Image (tube, rainbow, N blue to C red; front, side, top):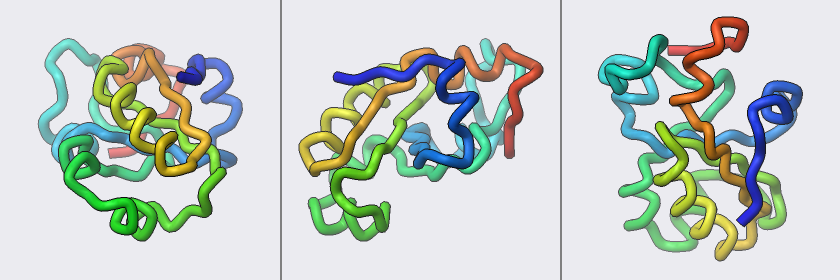
Length: 117
């Protein structure tokens, strides 16, 4: 499984598709983890809860993402576990999937990084 580090992701904001696989309430910042100093999501990230992703058919996932197979997709969650599962699913569907292992737990701790909520 391919991974991406915080510095590379920071430099590629706006250039790459980012998929937040947390719950919608984690994504919008209304119910995040108490250990995170900031709540919300990485700018430009799309949200698709991992549990919903796991229930979708191949055609449903492709329609939801509206991306050509082979497109690079960076997945993240809170701590890299859910996004690791998502990366496996996305890879199986033909996307160039990478896991941001640091995920929101890391991103939220850097005040110099932008967030949306």
